[in-house]
Image (cartoon, rainbow, N blue to C red; front, side, top):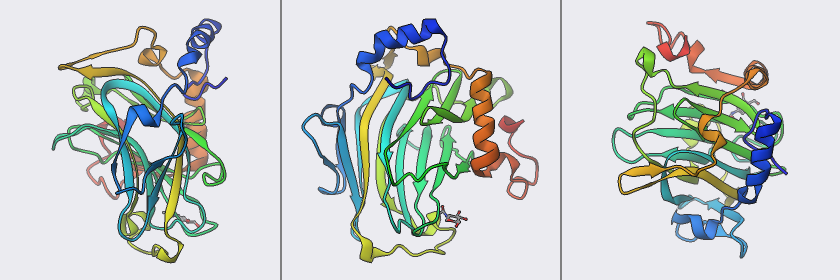
Amino acid sequence: MKFSCGTRFSFLVLFLIAAQSVAVYAGSFHKDVQIHWGDGRGKVRDRDGKLLSLSLDKFSGSGFQSHQEFLYGKVEVQMKLVAGNSAGTVTTFYLKAPGTMWDEIDFEFLGNISGHPYTLHTNVYTQGSGDKEQQFHLWFDPTKNFHTYCITWNPQRIIFTVDGIPIREFKNSESVGVPFPKNQPMRVYASLWEAEHWATRGGLEKTDWSKAPFTAFYRNYNVEGCVWANGKSSCPANSPWFTQTLDQSGLDKVKWAQNKYMVYNYCTDKKRFPQGVPSVCT
Ligand SMILES: *[C@@H]1O[C@H](CO)[C@@H](O)[C@H](O)[C@H]1NC(C)=O
């Protein structure tokens, strides 16, 4: 069995999770999402709704969104990214609320020319304001196999994990005046689109349209969340993720990922924040 979002569990928690594991990967792309963009470029590939592909060509990208909205949740999916020359493509998996004061929690994978690494871009928006980017290279080739990407969003923190390894924790720092996403329900989204200008350091690398269509695969979509209905959210009874924290081993893993694989951190970008880095960083 698979503890994709987990870091380290006591036996008791292991037990609870074992009891819950029937629910793991219970998601179905047929039932849980709508391919809302791309005019046929997004497709569910199997009868059980476990595998979906998105594609991108010169004319359009594609994407899906969850039917349900959630106020807190653990959302995960396995992804296999565009192989070969993927420069200029961006493959995403994220949570987002509507409106101009939106909240958003992002995984975005910026493609690269063949043989060069993808950049995993993470960000958190609160009330329409982002500017909290951390970017990583990965310790594997994300185009060769499926890997599990997970966002745990609970009232105290947001944890980003890759194959069960926490790479980033965004803590609720409302006590020092930093807004935290906690008032707006969000939908789950995924997309494959073209962002040559943003994704390749100012258009340095051109998207090679002779390689189109570009295709990314999503597998084993699963969400355990507090479903929003009629102006309130209700959480499933057994939700260990709702109080999940990072223990020492989890914090050590974040440190490992940041020391070895982080390529950009807004918290250390003094050029961008000459008046001092944002208070959430300190
Ligand atoms: C592409 O690869 C180079 C290293 O070869 C790296 O410096 C750059 O950040 C990568 N670009 C993206 C968009 O990931």
